[in-house]
Amino acid sequence: MPELPEVETVVRQLKQKVVGRTVQRFTSQDKLVIHQSMKKLAPGKITNVERKGKYLLFHIGSQIILAHLRMTGHFSLDVKGGKYLAGTFHFTDGGRLNFHDIRRFGRVKLVSDIGKELQHIGPDPLEIDSSLFVRRLQQHPQANIKSKLLDQSCISGIGNIYTQEALYHAHVHPHQKIGDVPAKTLKNIFTQLQRILRLAIDNNGTTVHNYTTIDGKGDFQQFLAVYGKENCPRGHAISRMVIQGRGTYYCGKCQR
DNA sequence: CAATCGTCCTGCGGGC
DNA sequence: TGCCCGCAGGACGATT
Image 1: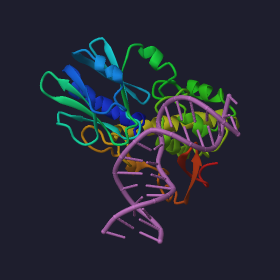
Image 2 (image 1 turned 180 degrees about the horizontal axis):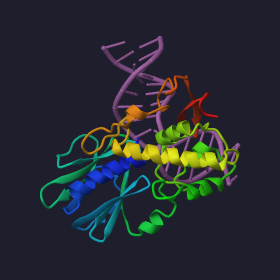
Image 3 (image 1 turned 90 degrees about the vertical axis):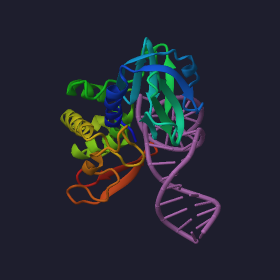
């Protein structure tokens, strides 16, 4: 599932491949995935592609397009059609950028007020220091640590996989209440999280189910310690519980 | 305020 | 063989 490192990987590849090219028109094949606002897209040059949390932003002239991959959204470049095609940017050079989505949870939308659109998004874990991270978590002492790490309004970009990996490496049980976790330990969660996110970006993300980059698969799955595993790196049996409807893997011995 | 559950969606794998 | 069922989960809204 695309989280911060996966979206960052896609954004970096798109930056290389589409910035500077001019979009002539956009066609929609899936009304559910492609917001009707995309009909209003005017031709223009792509000046930038960036990431905010798990969102991708395309700057086309003075227009901004917001895209979210959700579970199975992905882009393909300069090929015709293909499976699960939802929408297509047609370039003046004859090429195209396609958005596909098997499960159709993804979204592509032309936004007029990007600030308003993203006002609920918390800060990026790679752009803040540990004290802000700890402070923001400690604003919710009654909440459980895993739920809050998944809460995009608290910290943005972290999803189910990297939450579990960070908690494992910080030796924190996913069911811990934030108020019961010492500040020093919260700081270590931040340290582990940044380390893992950076390593994952260096490896083009994690491919477990459907995620692929523009060019191919990610390579971080080889570093996973608990997600989908039967044993942790120290050889203990991994347990699984459900938090907020999400599979949660942890080591009962390493994490307390 | 926090947790839980249903909803959306489709491919896939297990079971019989 | 083929079908049914449950599972995967990000975001959001309603409910507990």
